Image 1 (cartoon, rainbow, N blue to C red):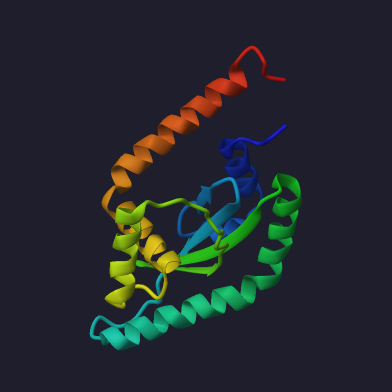
Image 2: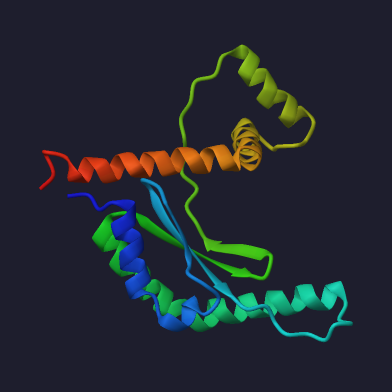
Length: 173
């Protein structure tokens, strides 16, 4: 039986060390290829008159420290989850307004495009917005995602509700 997104989230909430939730519950994103866990931690406490450069460096140091200090535990949890759910596990960290993904999957996606669509990609390549058609397509997907976050969130919620209803249906184990 395949685990639902809710079951996967519940497992991670139970498995992650409690001190990793000090900045709030981790953000867990799930798709059919990958589970991404983004832990939130407090930003470094600096003097009010600290420069923007000092603040960026302090955040970079906090992220680097967390990444190194938790590497072994994160890899142990990832191995357990990958075996349990047959998906890759990626990690990230949010410090204040800054989010960094440490490792994450770049999955190839095959598509067929007609000439007008290919011309859009070729224009982005010619303008040096992207290095290749693949990069241009990824750029387009990110752009659409940024401008339709609310709609995509509602759609994902609806899909999650459908998944929950399926598990309660007459064919549920």
